[in-house]
Image (cartoon, rainbow, N blue to C red):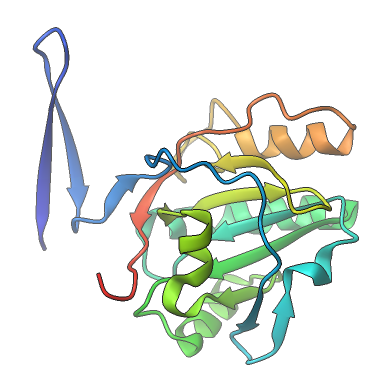
Length: 201
């Protein structure tokens, strides 16, 4: 198992060690590129059925979730993603999974979804076109859109990294604010997860 150690020197000279398991654990949202709106897109789910973002335009909000079948961080959120879907889809909030990893084929995504009981659609982002368009970097990474596909929230699900109790339930907070007609207070957080494995990388 490959392990890397990233050394970061703070201004006070203290060394902070961050262990990157398998060389894939990293922080997203590090780019200065800021996307404010998502263009309509059309992708196929793991059954080969074509779906478009515009199919969900009548929802109160659309939650795009970049996820993975292999990433341990993404997998640690499987139960939470199921709970979020169960709690909010009846309130007319749509959930769409996006898999952009080059090595994760449709049959792998289907098996993974069935094993974990996902009821939300998962679309295969072949050649990571949508990930590139949104500058998504890790799994899981979340984008919450309004009916005009403007990004209301971008970042992590919460700060628990999939295990233990979260102190900040950022995605839940954003969804509740949207449902009550309030402006999302925290619009951007830093996602933590496994780097999306892009074509050509």
